[in-house]
Amino acid sequence: MINAPSLTGMPLIAPPEVPAERIASLRQAFLQMARDAAFVQDAQRIGEPTEAPIDGATLHGLYAEIISSATEATALAYKQLTGQK
Image (cartoon, rainbow, N blue to C red; front, side, top):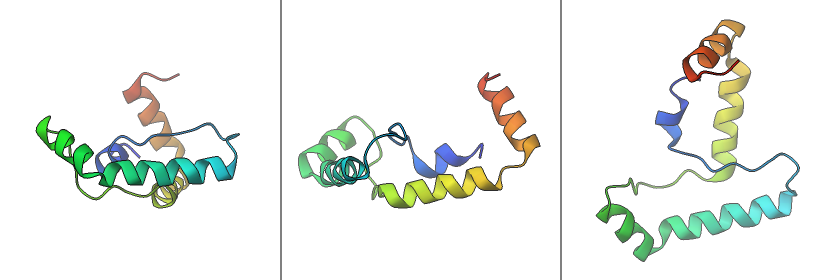
């Protein structure tokens, strides 16, 4: 749970009430942007990572697995490390 951001980069998220078809459109648009040659060139120019992006369904699965496997102690430690109450 604590190391998840290093595995996934900085994911974009949406609230749970966003319709599934909108999520699918946003995921497709993100992947198109991330694979656009001009975008990749600009990202490389400013030192941002340009490795293959993780698709939204895979990312969602990774976080669901991380969250479901967290113990109460892990969740408490994460909250303390991130300043959450």
